[in-house]
Length: 142
Image (cartoon, rainbow, N blue to C red):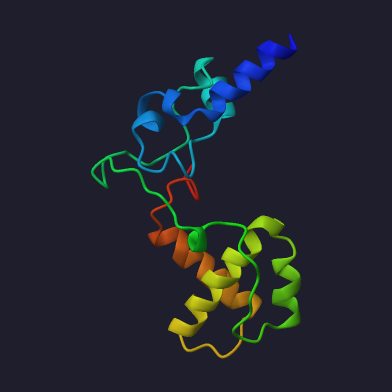
C-alpha cells in the first residue's frame, strides 16, 4: 500500500504525464492545475483541471518559466509605508506568498501615485491583477 501511494504521488508530481489542456499548457511548471478537481470530474488525476478557463497556445505552447525573483516565497521588503490595517490584512495571506504580494501591491501603488498602502489599495491592486493576469487559475466565473 505504501509503495502504491508513493508511486501515485510521484506520478502527480511528474508534469510530463499531465493530459489534455494541462499537458499542453505553457503554465504547467507553475500551476499544473488542480489534480483533485481532475479526479473528481474524470476519475483520472492526470486529466485536465475542469475549472481552468485558460486555453493553451496563447504563448505558442512555449513553457513559461519564472525567474527566482518572480516566484513566491521571496522575502518581504517594504519600499512604501503600510497602514496598520493593511499590514494585518497581509498576515491573512499565506506566508510563502506575502513577499510577492507586497511587491505587486507596492508596484500598483507607485504606478498610481499612492504614498502609502492601505487596505483599499490592496483591494484595488487585487482587482487589477485578476483583470489582466496571465496566470489562468486566479479567478473563474462560476
